[in-house]
Amino acid sequence: MTAILDIGGFSLSFRTAKGIARVLDRVDLTVRPGEIVGLVGESGCGKTTLVRAILGALPEPVAKRGGGHILLDGVDTLSGGKAAQSMRGRDVTFVPQDPFASFNPLFRVGTQIRDLMRWRGPGPEGSRRDHSRQTGEAAVHAMLDAVQLPAGVLVKYPHELSGGQRQRVLIAMALLPQPRIIIADEPTTALDSILQAQILSLLRRVAVERGVAVLFATHDLGAAWEICDRVTVLYAGQTVEIGPREPFFRAPRHPYTRMLLESMPEPDRALRVIPGGVPNPLAPPEGCRFNPRCPRATAVCGETRPPLSSAAHDHLVACHHPWTDAEQVARG
View 1: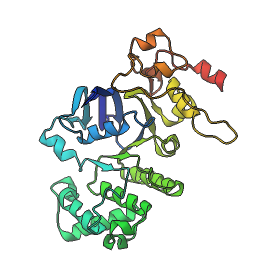
View 2 (view 1 turned 90 degrees about the vertical axis):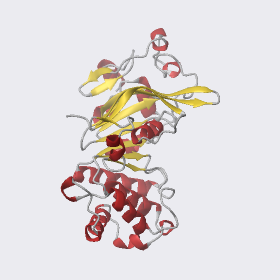
View 3 (view 1 turned 60 degrees about the vertical axis):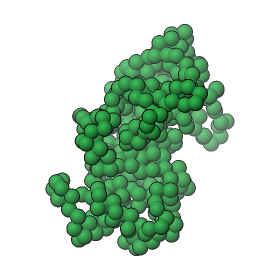
View 4 (view 1 turned 45 degrees about the vertical axis):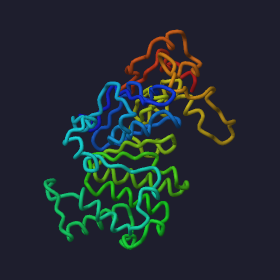
């Protein structure tokens, strides 16, 4: 199946007062139509930077593209052309981390949704936008129904809604243009555990019912387990593992992925941590950037960047010494 989002060998750096920060290093990631892909990793691994690159929201001229591509339906989103610009907010939409900061506090929710409809709303049969009030109102109410919100939220100001309601409104606004893919950047971070579960269930449901692809950036592996079809792991700006949810969680291949999963809290078990810290992007290690913290590292790991290679069906790993099937069985 052709990917709707195809990122290949994408590198990005930032000019800083202290030098060049090599933030993303030949990142690979794909999202197929209708699937939910988790983008996971520790804070500072490059998730939000990659999301901003996809959305074309990088600061100029501080950000410098180092190579590779980001293609949305075959269109280079970083080209600056009219086709790429028209896709943003229409074919690709965004659900941010902080639902409160995403609204203008001076206008009612309904006003802000209708403003979005005026510019990005769906049109008849996928052609030009139909701006009639009747069609717009019907679409707004349909989206509110889809995210299980009453029409009464339209007359309220953002501060009058709960955190969960605000996040549901943002999901409805992301769905309004009838996008091909939604980018969700840590959309449950500001919510309590009950609301997190509700929002995750909602994202999963609307993705399945409407056939919308979702790129779900999160540091929460539990959230990735709940809703994702596949998972891509970033470490210090490098893609280290890509795999379907079940084999990914059952038998991770990359040492970092395994240690990351083992660091998740469990009852009746001492907390486990990954020794060391995320490297400084101003002076990252050569080769595999995880090699200074990796218990399986050898000299080659610090000399040569391992390519993504097949570990099993649809399961890729970038490691010179990945976990093998025999080791997985022996470890249990």
